[in-house]
Length: 159
Image (tube, rainbow, N blue to C red; front, side, top):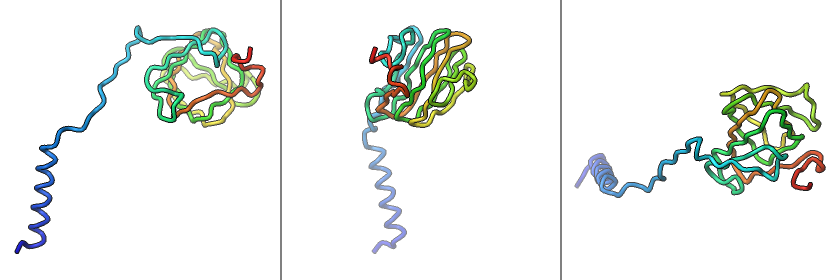
């Protein structure tokens, strides 16, 4: 009769051998995104002139979306609004300005230069003004996403 510690060792060895012979688990294919291949387009949910690009993931689905980019030209403003999900922003280029509150107040804007990252909690009202030139920001979160303007008259989808 085998001693218990020898039996456990044999079972462990058999398990390792079986795993080594198993086919590898399906792994997703690598994905790469180069700047020239990014498709920018207007978004009906932000004022005319801003552009978005969904690069990886689907922000409309209840799952992580990893890379959505927003390009806003110099002087561009977005009125106070909020999103249903927490968002992580990374500034890709330019200086991205954000202020928090239910009314547009330039004195509350904070400048985030290229390379900065910050988090905006879910349902927190905020606004933007690209005061010093064009900026591109990358946004990640867990969808589904959305946008609700504090003042419904500011919503470009209703104009």
